[in-house]
Figure 1 (cartoon, rainbow, N blue to C red):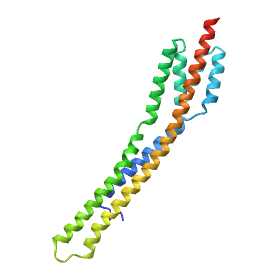
Figure 2 (cartoon, rainbow, N blue to C red):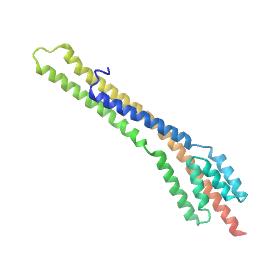
Figure 3 (cartoon, rainbow, N blue to C red):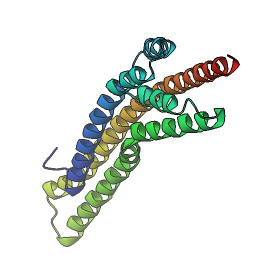
Figure 4 (cartoon, rainbow, N blue to C red):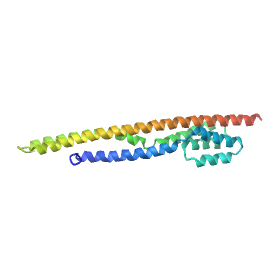
Amino acid sequence: MIAAGGPMFWVLVILAVVAVLTYFDRMIDLRRARIDYQDFLKGVFNVLDAGSEDEALAICADVMAPTARVVETAIRHRNGSARILREAVDSQGRAEVGRLDRRLATLAIIAQIAPAVGLLGTVIGFIRTVLAANSQELVSRADLLNGSMEALVSAAFGLFVGIVATVMYGSLRVRLDRTVVELEAAASQVVGYLSAMKEKELSK
């Protein structure tokens, strides 16, 4: 099958390798991004209640997760107005989601173009079959089979790569959506906590 695949087969092999590498790279990154944000926020809030802002920032710096960076941004802007605090948190949140979302489009593109590349290989294979049939009076069975096999292998492998890339993209998208939901929940909690804390300080 590999020998009969033709040039488009090797293009599909390259797309498959890129898809697999992208998938595992994004999977590792998304796994690192998810933490138990409830426990994390509880620890940060306890430190802030004790009046140690520097220690809270140090805790955030030690945790390599988007939630920690959003909380760190909120703490650094805690003395600003509610609008400034919310804008800073939203801006940092969008930046973190953008970093998590990077290269995910690569999988989506591969999922879309792989079947088209396979179809192109199919057309090339059938063109070779027709040319072989027209170029000589006696056409051997091998000449016809070579072009037909190239067409069939390209079509099958193109669909396979497209389906696998679609599944990989979907699984990563689900993980990303869950991470974004948790990030938004953590952002809302920390903004609410800091706003309430500021109101208490002003009322004293």
